[in-house]
Image 1 (spheres, helix red, strand yellow):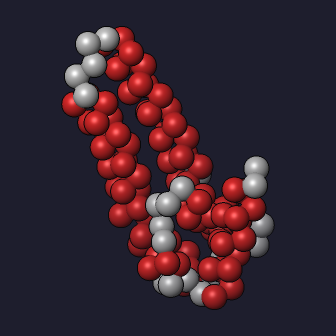
Image 2 (cartoon, one colour; image 1 turned 45 degrees about the horizontal axis):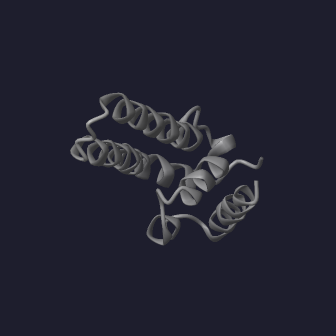
Length: 111
């Protein structure tokens, strides 16, 4: 995949901590809801928490693991697909990168 321009790479590096925090907070909120439900079956609650951790870890991995300029479009496409970034973050990118990210996000939805 084509590398993104330096300005877009810097924009991604700048937004990464906030977006990663959002992804982690979303996972913690889901876990918190499970815990607050006070299911009398502790084992089922544990399994539900485990499922959330696995699911959200997969999303975080697809969005952030091994991030490089050469795969930044794929990573941002995952972020967009999973709702971690939106129009505000996309507006910080060049039009070319923005369009490529949208294509990647949309193409991955079909999979």
